[in-house]
Length: 157
Length: 182
Image (cartoon, rainbow over all chains, first blue to last red; front, side):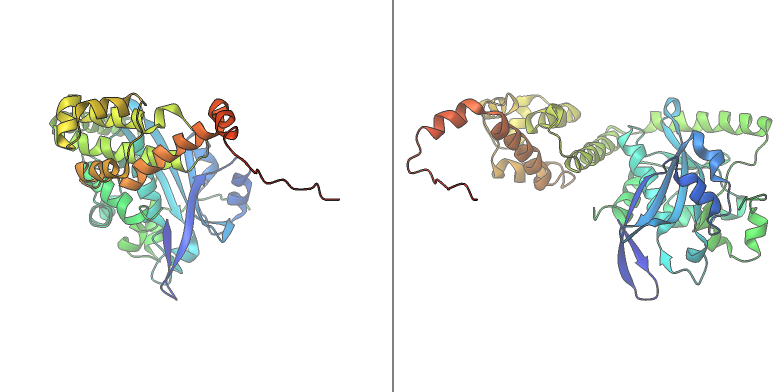
């Protein structure tokens, strides 16, 4: 998958892999992450990093597999500080992580269904940026919308 | 450094716009147990209604995408797996279409006997068939994927076919001979 280096406009090769036990202490010390990721240890936690710099984590995502409801729930996602807001250095981090969750949901036979619990004021943004739609108090993405995300963020692999 | 206090949406709103927060965060649930129970019940009802409403076409499209992504994972590892042979995956593809082998052979303009031989590993697929399969899936499964499935099996056969290796060796003359280096 490719991220975008904003200052130069160049593409950067990136990868996503599951967080290992030894990563949690480094994440805890990393001032670029503000959430307590150790709480998420009981779930599937993934990190995204550049292939040229595997030690620097650019973003983290915690997923809960709910096979009885044919879905993966996106419990927590955080992009590291230098890559947030208008001055961010690297773009597409959250997009790649959400697309990765959608890809897992396709592979597990859930028709690509990924849910999340949004803050009310962020609903429109999750819908327009990633194609989520409302399911009561949750948002969900599935089917063609999930495939579109996979194609947009991951398909060059 | 211990993180004593996690940032709330309101904290982040002081520095980032909603658009920027949505591009960087998905927050944990803040619902209490009762709210979560109600939200989950409502969600499950909507989710299962949606599953029932899915058309055969939507299910097929999703299953084909799943097949493609699982093939991609297979290509990224080095082992040969029988269920990912060309013939096994082709059987799976035909199964998803819910078509008879005869109808499927007609779709691809090949004789049903030829299809049967390929499905039973009695005959190798050719490139023409791979191009036809790509077109048949509306380009969802590229010809290169079918080729990679075939070549991985071929490689495994070459590694393990000691009998053929011995037979063919006997037909070779003037085998190169190298002195052992000092």
